[in-house]
Structures are given as structure tokens and as C-alpha cells.
Image 1 (cartoon, rainbow over the protein chains, first blue to last red):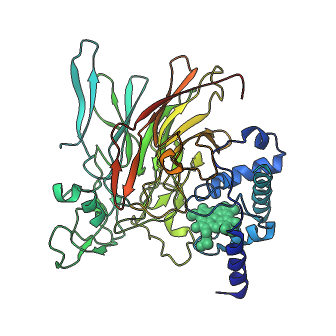
Image 2: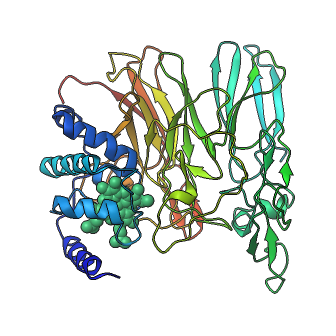
Image 3: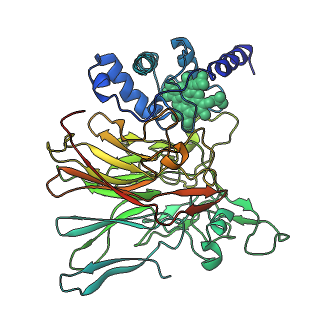
Length: 112
Length: 354
């Protein structure tokens, strides 16, 4: 494992201890009232991420709506798939798209 | 057991069989029905998880009853000739391992270029019949377990598909259930794609992705309307059509919830709620779900509320939603343990105060 991946995993395990997330309460209206970038981020998120992190909460993968992961780390995770998560190549999720996904995740976190 | 049937029950109580002997003797049953323009549409699940009969099917009980049963494709397919080695649960534990290919009985190997004849009825499909009875017709195929069928207010056919499990000779990890809009004549990707994406193209570190079983694919599968939780068991489907309820045109899906660990491991309970899908944007929101920090079924949260919603429908005037909640079913290792008397029917109506 590369050093950067090892450090990243360390960060993840620290982040795991963060408070547990809101679950089961829809926030449809606030999300829908959002600007275009966040909405596009939600559409991309629901296409590529929702199956394992349903609405940001844990499922097959861990919750990601409850920890203060910086945007670059989320984008790193998307591109490199640290741990058992699959990686998404640039042809699948572009740089701009991964930024929109991050914008949506930040909005989720703000609402939680 | 002779397989699935579609029956017509008339007002005077007489019962007519429209079709019988459907290939539902394996993992998945016959689903539906939906009626549109003189036809009854129904879904037929696959015999297996990923087209290869294996020891998991002995665990499910049917392999010993029907050792020759296997998936039947709807049209002719050509195999890559992949075979999978497994223990032989039909003999003693000391027996030699056996090799099994795709779309053939347990213990039968296949070769490259081997053609498997398509036939009707077939597995992993949506089929239809004239309401007064007649010839079976193929509507769509390549669907692992097409569970909930429903018509949108504009008359389009949609279906929820239960996706792969991590079990058997060809386990598949990490593919979520999906909602499809059905285009007649299309192939939806089972057993080589999940949610429209080739299984072999995903990058799962450490794990070896399943390689394709088919030499040629009938087409590139369409893109799903929405991707739902892996193992959420997204089953019942209904559309709101009325402002009296709200969300007219949106799809509502009852998620039975995971059957971990028999189907694979999860980080946290998945499903156990009713979700709402905007079919235009392909986005999904929780609609009815238990509150609280832990989420999951009521018996696990030690609260009241939803347990395992399996079916959803609306009153004829569209103002009320009804949810069939199967009730408590814990997993005791590989075995489901349903609790008698725990099922519920919920009614959901719009209120003026949020």
C-alpha cells in the first residue's frame, strides 16, 4: 500500500469515530431548493454512490454524511477507491462531476 | 411443486389457468401481475444468483428437490465456456468437487462457443399473455429478479430488479437494486451486467470481478432510472397519481431490507423503508422510514415503526398509500426466521400540518 493511501486510511479510521448521522428523515425540500450544482451533484451521487452509501448513510459501505472529510479526500476516494470501495476512472466520473458530488455531500452534512 | 401459474378469477368464483409450469422452481418466483391494453404482464425471476447452479441452491433447498433445474434464456445465447468448481452437496461431503457451467444443470460443464437454446417461458424476464388466454410473448429479459411491476400515470411499464448476492459459485459484490423503465424487446444485462454496467469493468480492489459468461451480448443494456441500496431488496412498486396525496408521477418502492449475512455482509441494515423516486431526475429520497440515529427495522431499533415493507399501492382515488409490512424476519445465520403475527398494513395520508 502506498504511503498516501496508508495515511488516508488512518484519517478514515479517526473519522469513523465522529458522531452518527441523521437517518430516516427526508430533507427533500431543502435539497430541492438548492442551487443547480448541488442538484446535479445529487443526480450524480444517486447514480454512482447511492447503492453503497444510501443517501449518505451507511449500507454496504460506511456513512459519509457524518464526518468532516475534506473535498480533496472525497475526490481521492472516488478516483482511487481506497479499501474495498471500487475506483471510478475519469472517463466515468469527470473532475467537474466529482466536484459536484462533493458539493452535494457538503450540503448533506450541513443539513444533518 | 410444478412452477408458477397465472390464474384468472371471475366474479362468479370460477378460476381459469392462463399459463402454468413457469420456471419458478429455483431462487426466485413469478411476480406481478400488471394489466395493460388487453394483456397481463408478469415477471419471472432467475433460477440462480448469477446463472450458475451451485451449493447455495442446495442451501435454499431446491437443488435436492430439482437437481436438473437451471436458468433458461429467452433467446439463443453463446457461452464463453466458463466452468466453476464447487463441492457436491448432492453427495456426501467426501465426494469429489464438480464443475458447472452457466445455464445448465448442476455438475454439467460447458465449452466455449456452446449454444444454449432460448425458449418461452424463460427466466429473468417480463412476459405477457392476452387477458383471455393465448400465446406467451416476451417483453424484456436479462433481469435477475424483476420483482415489482407497475404502470406510471402515463402508461409506461416500470420494474424493480433485485440484484446480485455474494453467494454461490459466481458471487457478485456491490451491485445495487435498480428501477428500470421497460422498453419492449430490450435485454437488461443479467448475468454479465449489473445496473447497466459490465461486472468485469468495475474496479473492485482485492476482489476478482466475475468475467463474462456470454460470448456476445444481445445489446448494451439501457441505463437504470435509479440505483438503490445494495441488498435493500427493493420490491413493491407504485406510482402516485394524485395531488390529494402529492408527488404525482413519482415512484414509491417498498424495501424489504437486507438478508445479511446469507447474501453478503453489510455495514449497517439496508432498506427497511419506503423510498420515493423522481423518475425524471433519477433521484431518490426516504419517504417512510424509522426516525432515530440508528435507522433500520423497528425490532432492531427497539422502537415502533416499519419492519420489512414488501408491497405498496394507492387507493383508487389516489389519496391514500397502503404499505404491506411483512413483519419481523430475523436472519439466523443463513436461515430466515419469520415471526408469526408480526405483519402490519399501514395507511399513509397527506396531512396539513407537517
